[in-house]
Amino acid sequence: MRITTRHDDDATRLVLTGDLDMATTAVLDDSVAAALTRPRPRRLVVDAEGLLFCDSSGIHALMRARDRAQRLGTSFVVANPVGITRRTLEITGLLDVLTTATAPPASDESDGR
Image (cartoon, rainbow, N blue to C red):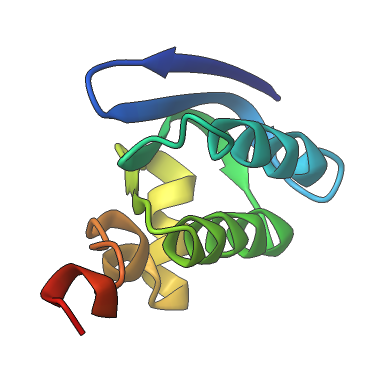
């Protein structure tokens, strides 16, 4: 699998190409960790259009990425899942979970508490 990182205004986009499986999840984990270092983006987008295959370990890696981003206050979304990747997300019930952008968690500091 190959991951290309792109930055724009307030988002970092990780563009995935190839297979996301047991042999390649560490590559995604490392890319997510790097993307969420300072300066931390407001949004992290994982572009899955180029994924040819995604197994259960790949889905777990996407969920880890989502959880990590949320813990750090970064919005997260998987964009453009197609083909077998989209079908796998549909079957597992995670299509809406991963393709709906998350909002950063509310902070008590933001409302003056």
